Image (cartoon, rainbow, N blue to C red; front, side, top):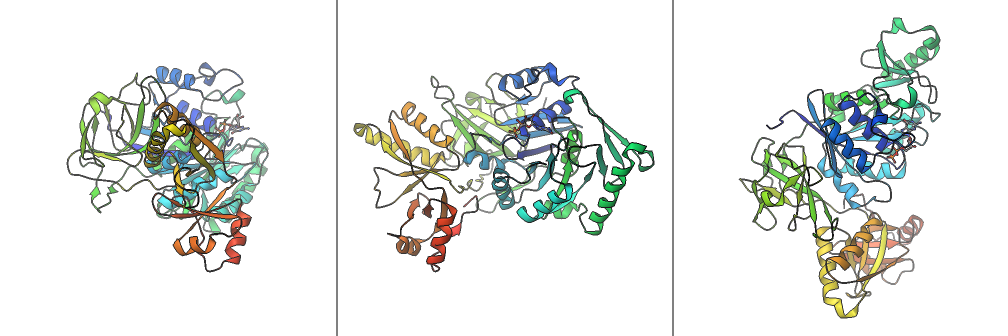
Length: 520
Ligand code: GDP
């Protein structure tokens, strides 16, 4: 039977350690009631691991992949698309955002807006993805709520519109004032946050004596916020001008149900998409989907290739023959077996907003469209500002042909960006990446797939700016900068650090040196 309940497809954007894993786990636990988090997770280590997920999946029937987590809440199906973050931060992390309709920006109350969060936010801004902000770790000392609002306004230029306001400062978390109803959502601390629903709603007149002082303080600030036009406005939120804010403690399980409610009430549902030729695909049109992530080499014996696609329109049914827009060829999902993540649980049907993984999808590349019926091709996934650079040379000169072929293929797939210049020649292109893990993938696939060992050596550059042909000419020979050309024709000027980039811009005012917003 197909599950046509309404969808919400979102991702969490955050800096490592802000609490994304803890929140993800708490969301999944809330969506399907269980009594003890400890039943799934070992004491002391609450980090979600693959085996935890598998156990959770078995216990509660949630479909989990390394790319997406699916669960049910209030008769909605929620797809949480993973944004790899620690050492596995890569161009994929940005690309994932092309597959979601909204994002939750998770902020550590003690640290404010950190670099990785800001980078991911830029991608959301560029793509017009509405962002809900969750201030996490309110159970421990941190910045003041007003300070955090200022930081948001200043750093991402979105108007924060708090939906809840903390009662008690960070570290003395009594609960929140629900700014829409004026109620106090009181929070009861539970051992390790293991049990569900530590929240109790009450009217302002029921606030107990020992909370009275902090409550009146919260009411005062709430009124000030309203005077300051910091109230939620759905239209402005969807237009990417404001960000609703709430306060939580993922570890203590507080605010988690509030967040799920917000996702259902405020976050957009899957909508129509426009193809490169301007054709619009409505969600109930024929099936279409685009690939936002490709994983290969997970199983060397099988040369496995798993392509994750987001369904844009129509119903997906396993076994369907779809057309691969890039080649015009049919792609049989029957043999490719569509799955949620692992090949043990194949999915029979899926709806717009869902993520499906096609196994053995040798032909599918990042950005590719597959469809049924009227042809459609969605715009390519853009490339993003690289921050890591290496030179690549064939490890075995006798296998140079294979080396070239491999590099070309990995470039096309978007595994890394390939940069070249006359000066460096074709023997030794520069590979550019958002995260260093992308280079590991290159090394591995060059050896195992193309039988072409590769030697990578690190370049000191950290910053890329976009320039043009005249800029490239003027900067040639200038110290501290090297200009190379990406396969798509874009000229990139590489610098050791931001400071060099700024100095060069000052000394060469006529040269175009644009900051690469992620996505160009
Ligand atoms: P991730 O790197 O963003 O996935 O962060 P984790 O979920 O692994 O959390 C990083 C650390 O912060 C862990 O030690 C968590 O236990 C802790 N943590 C996460 N959420 C909270 C919270 O709400 N309050 C407190 N005090 N600690 C938290």
